[in-house]
Length: 84
Image (cartoon, one colour):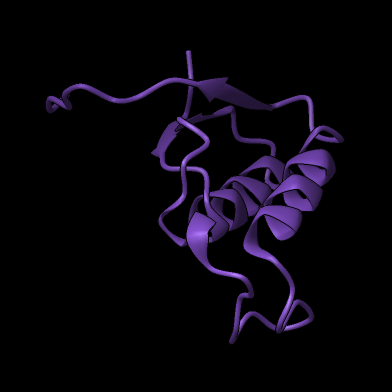
């Protein structure tokens, strides 16, 4: 069972997964691989990655998350969410 399920694996979702994974929380990231900024030539305002192509940043981030056994990246779309 997951501690957290993150819907969306772009910059914010992957950053959240990284912090939770480092805290040894079991995390699943649901993402379809179609970020909103996929058509942008460059990203701006992301420290250390200003003016890099968004998809390059995401590929690097996904690779970094493979170091954490508690983080699982799933190619899926959330259809609905219900309360616990």
